[in-house]
Structures are given as C-alpha cells and as structure tokens.
Image (tube, rainbow, N blue to C red):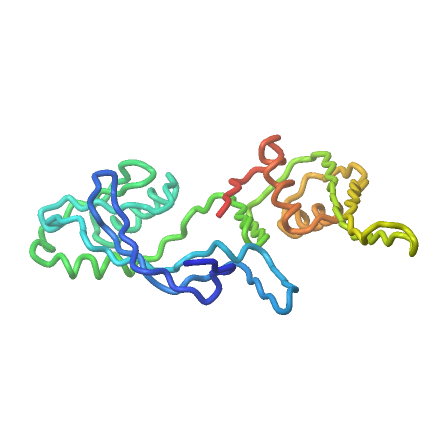
Length: 254
C-alpha cells in the first residue's frame, strides 16, 4: 500500500478469489513471504532479489466447497500430478488391501473405487483404511527454477545429452559527472554547472563449453559449473537447453 518498497514483513489483506462464474470461492489472507529484501538509510540502499513479489503459503480459506454424497459411489480419487504408472500402482494397492477388483485407473489423473458391500454405511472406515496405504509415486524428471530468488533445484532423474553451450553477459554502466565552470575574475560571467554522462558497455568473453552426457545430478552441476555462471545465468542456460532438446526433464518456473 502507498509507496512501500518491499513486501518483507507485510500482510495480505482479505482478498476474495472468484471463479469464472464470478462467485467467490476462496478468501486469501496471511503473512507474505518475500523472496528478497530492500533496506535504505541516508540515501544508500541495498537490495537482494525481488522484494516486491512474494507468496502466502496456505493463505486461502475455502468459502464455497463442492458438495456431494460419496457414500453412493463410485468414489474417484484425483492425482495432483497425473501419471499412468502412479495411477496403476494405487489401483493395485487398493485391490490388494480390499481383496477384490474394487479399484481401476480411469486415466492418469483418476482412480475409480467401487465401495464394497461390507463398507456400506462405513465410509469413514473405508477412507481410514485406504489413506494408510503406501505407494511409491513415479515422479517425472523435473527442474524447478525461481526467477525471484535465483534458485535452481534439479531432481535425481534429470539427464542431459551431449551439447555445446556458449553464454556471455553484457554489462552496461552509466555514470554522471558534475562539472563546475568558474569564469575569470575580470570576466562578466556567472558560475555554471553542467553534467556529463559516460556510458561504458562491456561484454564478458566466455569460451564455448562442451557438456558431456551425464547420468547424475552431481555430474550435471559440475558440467554447468564449467561455464562459471551464477544461478540466474543457469536459469537461462537450462531453459535454452530444454528448448534445444538437450535435457530430459520438465523445466518449471515458479
């Protein structure tokens, strides 16, 4: 609000979240977690990352829930991250626990469960039994990057193919100098000030680095470190490598 320079320590006021139909479904409110900070004193300021953007973890309160009678069946479980292998494993685990063919994977995101006769009217007991099952999820290879904080996180299944990468940075510096012109003692003139700007552009020269095909995240990090790039540079490099088809992983920007 007003002329705030940073969201650090801020609080999100009650904000209604509406759906496509214009109805309010969630109210958002809570403390904001900023990805950086900005401090200033006596005309000097220090800034890290982007302090004007942030997130509110678990800051939503559902005001209008989806109603339904689950006891009539069949019950459908939805996967937050759809995957064929994970859906199949969940259906197999449920059938093994219930000693039957009650569950089947409809698609990568849904498992349909027919409520057995012995659990009619005991829906809570059925859910209690199913939520205790442990299933190994088949996670896709994924690289998550945050432009706000410059964070790069790579999973264990990330693979890269042999590729050549050249990355250089262009830095531009603009400085302003104040010149004072003093006329001679006998001259009829006045003291004047002028400003002169100097623009200096420098481009870092970095050689082309051939990255070998890797099999582990450790080797991937070592290969990228050969470029001498900082985390923000790695974000651009990884996105370019993904576009070139050199990375077997999904690059997700948050």
